[in-house]
Length: 509
Image (cartoon, rainbow, N blue to C red; front, side):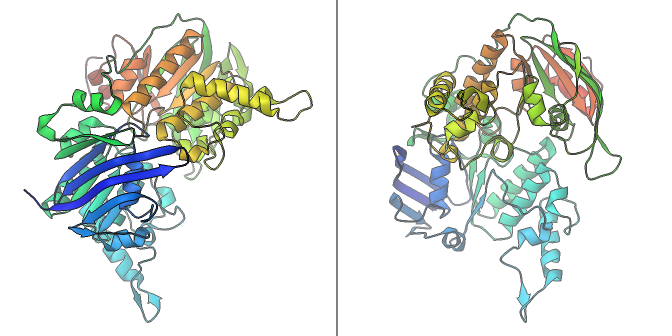
């Protein structure tokens, strides 16, 4: 049996009112890929923050061993010196700096007090070549798509010669080709004796790359398996503590009249003159309908939603109709007033104020619901409204005064939904509504979608998870290169037909 590279024994970590980790034991052998899975709030991130030095020794109970030696990390630098590298789900790159500057920031090669930029960029080129990223090393991060930024994060971790590499949802924003590149990189690292801790909600990927799988639930170690001794349904049952009878509990609602329509919408890239990110798109959606939108990364789906909602920073052309009447929407506040609401794909940047409370986040877009006749916020009314939303959406929080950054990803997403629902939207746009959240929380969000369509709300859902689109949509619109590539009924929509349209391949659709 391979040498034990990492051993965490009897780990206990508490926050005010919450025991996030409860006697957790976790081991990783040298040169293995060990997947760490569990619902949001299960304790995965907390455990990794202990291993990476973000939570220093003394703030938790238990022991941490690396290569058999007891470690007491005071900070991230201590962990890095012990060979621990982390690729976080939330990118930490500085967008106004180049790729090379980001990779070697704080570790620049210096001679006679001057940074040797030739060495910085030559080493960066070698790193990018090793992961198959063919791009100019002097390119500013802000000009890269999210997928390429993720690969730069991977290159940055590799530059530190980490012996223990932690990957937290590393494929959340990658295309299929980029995922294949990442899997190749991980296998190469494994062959060199690097130990990888792989955190993902995508169980297909977990079973493709992992040697062993450990399941956490409610801050406790539930099981550890060799991959060949368990299947995906067994892992899901361990994660949620129950069997999920239906991953996509779609309920078909009675559909009414067309409530929303766009005609010939075109949106231009705000930075590249003349480039269209949305090209002459038209579609409509009915009351009580879920219109799914599929397509590969870069197909223009998010740009289209932002353009509808008045949030696109470039020029937008085309017509928007609500209840048959043409409307001009120039800002998100105008969109909300006209009965539209948008759950953005990046909840932490655009959907939440992380340093504020659950209550503040829920009411920020619908303050009129919590304002008294004297035009000031009524604390009692605000508490009543927020408590109702927390109960209705089953948001797990000790209090509505909890800082939202302390919630799990799935509960943060529910807070974003609660904020949108408080505006009483007639049309709800969901951009990657379940990205980065666990299977149990996903099911609860699907039930919220059912609840909304039963009330006659029209839902437009963008998702990169094809089973999700197929499982929850009444119709599927497929986009490719900024254009509508085709539309499919629920009955005609299959993985093959959708991908054929998304890629431009020939198929019977």
